[in-house]
Amino acid sequence: MTTGSDKDQEWPIIFNFTPEELRPAVVLNLDEAADRALVNGKLKWAPGLVPGEPNEGLVAGKYIESPPRLKDFDDSSWEEPENIREVIGTGFTFAWYRFTITLPEKVRHVDIAGAQIWFETCSDDYGEVWMDCPPFTREFLATHAIKANNFTPVTGYNARDRILVTNSAEVGRKHVIACLAINAPLAIPLGGTFIRYARLEICQGVAKIPV
Image (cartoon, rainbow, N blue to C red):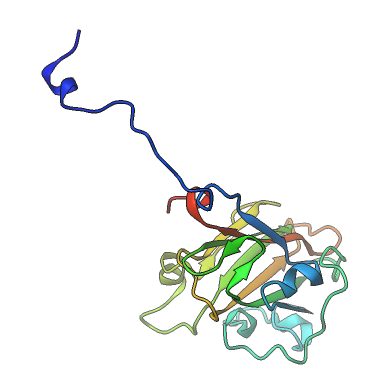
C-alpha cells in the first residue's frame, strides 16, 4: 500500500559521485622517511616524562608539567629514532615522540586543500596524543583540550589512539603531533615502552569520516 506521503518522496536516492570523490584515502607510515617526506615531515624522540630532567622528571607529591606536549616546544636537540618500535627504558618509564608535518598541495593522488586528516598510533602500553597543543591556562585545561581536539588521554591498555588533525586541511599549514608512551601496568610495569606504528590518513570525497 502506498500512502500519500510516500508518493511525495522520490526513491531511491541516487548519489552521483565524481571519480575524484571516489578515490581511496592515502595512508602514510610516518615511521618511514619516504612517507614523511611526502608531508615535509620530521620525527624526533626523547626518553622520560620530562626529557633531560633527573629521574625522568618524576618527583613524588609535586605537580609536573611536561613541555614536549606543546606545539611550540623546541625539539631540535632531540634525536631521530631509527625505529619507533625500539624498546626504551625499563620499569616505570616514559618516552616522547614528536611528528611535525607541513602540508603540501598534493599527496599522491589526493589534493590537500580541504582534506580530512587523521593520525593514529598505538603505544606500549599506555599513550597520550597531543595535537597542536597550546599551553594550559585557567581557561584552557585538559577538558578543554579534549573538546578542542588537541588531546586524547589514555584510552586503555595497548589501545589505539586516533585523533583528527584537521577536518579541512590548509596547504602550507604546520601540524605538530606529540605522543607520550608510558610503560605499564603501573603496579608492575614490565619491560620498557615504545610505539607500534604511526599513521597519517588523508581523505577526500566519500573517504572522509563524518565527525
